[in-house]
Every structure is written in structure tokens, then in C-alpha cells.
Length: 337
Image (cartoon, rainbow, N blue to C red):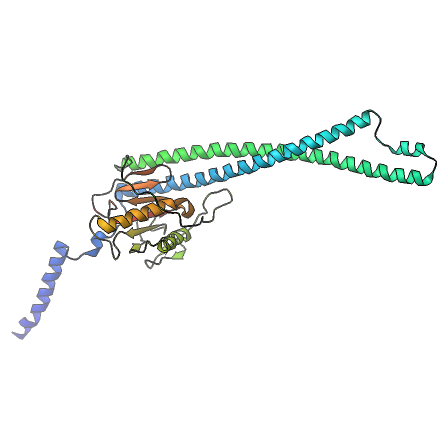
């Protein structure tokens, strides 16, 4: 009887464990966003590539537009200076043609007085040096003008090339979304976020520098990229402090690369239900903040409440998997360049 009595707790423990496994009682992982698989993984990979290339092209375009403005301003100044120097050169040439330009021979023949001759020679040397300097400046300024015209043409050509890249990647992102059942027009999307950040560093051509998973992830034991860490910290500074999870191993997409974070609408955890009330308002405000600061931070896309925001086309519908996590009803997904 003692042996049988001792086995009862073990049997009850087994039955309880079995029951929990069957009905899924108190399973917090059910609400945890998982790394997309199958078709959605393919969509995410296509979005990652298309939006990254779009952002880099947009950065190069913006840099080229700024370069064009600066060159145009310089070119105006240079053209004015060329005009002034050409007028001076014309006066010098006209004087030489009419024989009115002082020469060393004229000075030597004009006087027998040595002091007068020396003074005249000094004057001639000064004037010849001055004239030669002006003519040299004219030649150099003309070269500068031609180089500026060349640089201006290159800037315009670069802009046209970047616009083509942007258009190509915009279409690629739209096609990927459509294949997954999204990409349609949507209404009621979050807007009106406030810019609270400063621009992150870029390459000299305006594109974003490549980054790896090199920083400790404050939300897990994994790693994230410097730009992702900066975005996470800036979101915290802006008041978005609800439960967040960034790095996840395995699969594809940006989480294993340390370039994505999931910001729960709920303050303490991922809830396996559609966010409503204050939680939904929090998610709306956070998504709007991400978009307002997208250029400064280097955002590739934002997913929230079965919608996706991309820099190329704004808010579109998102094809999820029918669950609160898969449809992004319970968290804001932020993917970084």
C-alpha cells in the first residue's frame, strides 16, 4: 500500500502534464512572434532586399541632388569670374594691339636718365607680372568652369540612374506583397508621428554602411546591429518602453541578422489576441513614430495591425497567417537597413 500511495503523485503529475500539452493551458509561447517560414519567409527576404536597395538608391539620390545644388551655386560664381577676367584680358589685348602697352624697349628709349630708366623698368616688370597673373587666372578659371559643368552633368545622370533603381525595387516590393495576399490599399493607418532623432551616419555617396550583428541585444542573449540598437534606444527615449524582443536564431529574415525588433502592444508580454484600447493606441503611436523617424534611423519597413509601411509606397495591406502574431495585431515589427 505504501508503494502504491507513493506512486499517486507521479501519476497525477503525468496526467496534469499530458492535459496541459493537449489543451495548451498557459502556453505563453503561443503569442510569441515566430520567424516566418514558407511563403512568408520568401516575401520577407524579397522585401528586405528591395527596401534595402531602395533606401540606398534614395540616399544616393538625395546626396546627388544636394551636390547638384552646390555645384550650380559654384558654377554661377565661376561664370561671373570668367566674365570679369575675360573683360580684363580683352583690355590687355586691345592695348597691345594699339601699341599703348608699356614695354621694356619704350622705357629704354624714352630717357637718358639712369634713375628714370630703372624706375621705368621696375614699373614694366610689375605690370607684366600683373598681366601674366590675370591671364593665368583666366585660364585656370575656365578649366574650373568646365570641370564644374562636367560634375553637374554627372550629378544629373546619377540622379536618373538612382530613380530607375528606386522604381525597380518599388515594383519588386509590391510584387512580393501581392504574392502573399497583401499590397492592397488600406485605410486608417497610423500617421502624425514626431521626429525625435538625429540622422545616423552614411557612406560618402549617401547610402547606408553595411552592418552585422555586432552589438549585445538588450532584450535577449543574442546580438543586433548598431543601427537596430540605436533605433531601440531612441524608441525608449521617446517613451516606447513596452515589452520588446529583437534577436531570434534560425530561419531567414531580419531577426537572425539582428536587424529587427518586435515591440509588443502590451506592456509586459506578447498577448495572443488582437490589441485593443490603450494597447492598440500604443501600437499606432509607435508605428507612426517609426515612420516619422525612418530616414534618420534607416528603417526598411514597419508592420503593424495587418498593414505594412515601406519607404517606397507608404502603407499597404499585409498578408499574414490568420493569427494575432502572424498578422501583427499584437506587436509592431521594425526592420532596419
